[in-house]
Length: 120
Image 1 (tube, helix red, strand yellow):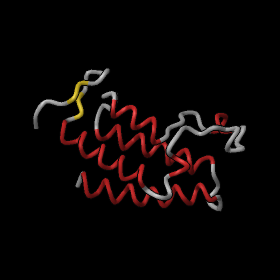
Image 2 (cartoon, rainbow, N blue to C red; image 1 turned 90 degrees about the vertical axis):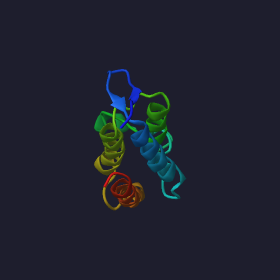
Image 3 (cartoon, one colour; image 1 turned 120 degrees about the horizontal axis):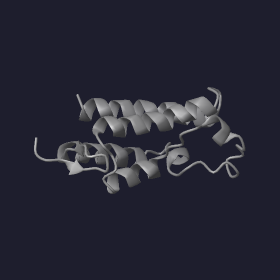
């Protein structure tokens, strides 16, 4: 593998991994059930005033996109961890009967299939 994209912490995301991460992210962004995950949660609009009491490390697809675009993603493992954090936050805050939880499960299944294809 060739040189990677330097990041703030000195590690590197290889060009090949960066392409794969961007491809996965674009697929997630285009997914019809991704709408709750496209931007940071607005507790007022979401009628979730205790959101930040429950979720200590918020994450969303726009923040992940910014990390990739600004070379702040340290590795494909870090990228996957950010997506997992976003989904885990969803499952933590929303009970299984909640529509957002169910959308998160659908997006999770799509994400897993993408990762398995991109990083066998």
